[in-house]
Image (cartoon, rainbow, N blue to C red; front, side, top):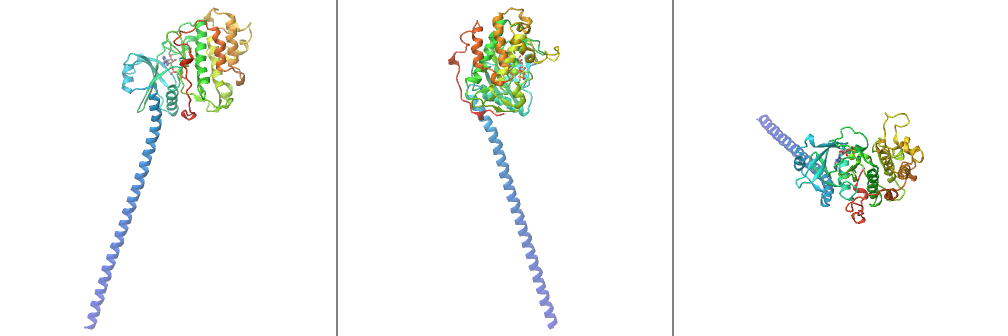
Length: 399
Ligand SMILES: Nc1ncnc2c1ncn2[C@@H]1O[C@H](COP(=O)(O)OP(=O)(O)OP(=O)(O)O)[C@@H](O)[C@H]1O
Ligand SMILES: [Mg+2]
């Protein structure tokens, strides 16, 4: 009887133990579940916070770029929609293509207010293209001179980046000096006086960049195709996509990747990457040589010794007897030898291998002024009141 009681007692205790174990195990599982749920909740919260931070950062980046552009827009450069530029160019029709450069195709267009424009459509989505777009918009909206091509507006619509400029009826200078492939401009023989006036106006464009703004702006891609001519062959300097702000300190330099166009790049910049306004003066000298000779800066199809324009011309430039040998045959001798000797001397100084021996652009302007008889109409001649000296912050343009 007593044995049965002991068995019952034992079974009862075993039952309680089993129940207790089950309860404890359930509590443990529940605790684990709660811990896991809490872990998931925390993870989700952290990841949501990270994503929000990322989105905020991206937004900030976009905002800072856009903020710049908005400021720019307020300064007179118009923001166009893609649709507006699409209709201005007849749907970017092939018949409106007027050129093709490293940025992309250039279209002729007419805005709704009837203004004729040139529209550059960026075709390289790479970093260099984006950077050039940004620099061009930021710089051109702050710089105003009758000798710089005016930027009328831009479009930055999703992946489309377009720049809208005033239209220059006679295209690039190089198209009138020597045959250029794919050129649609009707080439015109430029006479001596027109060449002198183009040389002066282009020099005034560079003088403005180097000496009328602070800190100075170094163009970095000055060449004949970046000198555009209006219907009366007045010249304006274009394409600031590669421009850099120069050093504030006189005699200083900025170090950059060597960019520019073959045949125009100053030797010290090509060798060391040290960029100064004197690098532009060298490129200007090459353009003067193009105007004198009607030759391309580098043409390896020419006889030995004549392929590189500067190397061929420099020894002849300062020799009064020989300088006539370099002159463009298209000019048919219709120039004054006195003037040729003076222009050749300026060109020789500009392309000096030693940067310090090159003149300032202001000096070039002063030397050319007396040679240009027919000054442009008063509305466009460089009256001081049309210049202003905007203060540019070095941070506003990046490399
Ligand atoms: N504002 C404009 N008005 C009229 N024609 C223009 C204008 N801008 C450019 N063009 C034409 O488009 C051509 C190509 O110009 P673009 O600046 O794109 O290239 P580039 O100067 O030849 O070379 P790079 O891209 O190396 O500067 C010019 O030679 C010119 O004929
Ligand atoms: Mg160009």
